[in-house]
Length: 224
Image 1 (cartoon, rainbow, N blue to C red):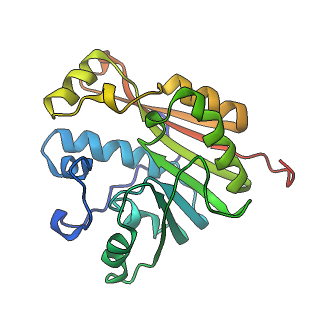
Image 2: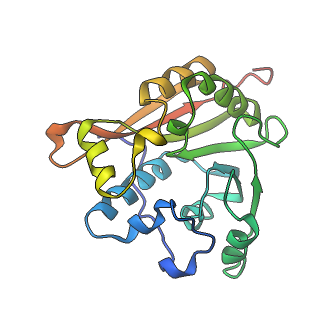
């Protein structure tokens, strides 16, 4: 597996320190034995592709599990989420002297100026969009990225075994996942330049990839 530099270890607070966790928030799985390794690994592979800079936007930040890592790479951390209680999540990090700029909103119409972010990060978000929404999402991502800015996304590769595993966790992915990794890749490639695709394999690795991280870049032309 090829990545851009060392894979960072995900820095997590004790679980009870996070606030605003919804019933369907997968954060609890990060702390479980065995399956927690897989949940953390997918985030770590995404973080390994983040190159740093002035501003990062995480779409679908949830409880803020990436924020401790992102503050080592970026001067400003921004977040957009449809459901997260932004004030509660922000207070968790403000007490640790990490200021985050959080808003509620949709990826399909993001409340930011154009050419504003160095990085847009989406971890297990794009599979929840319908295939015909992917182009609109990447058009918005391209709009808010600076020329030369990057988008890093992670999406699951759906297989019968994965669907069974989620059912064991009480989670029917058919009710939540509408786009495949191929749908996401095609939409990203229509709007941006591919830098790298990183595959995360399960155990045993003969089962093939179970998660894909995409790294794409906006053209450096200011008018793109």
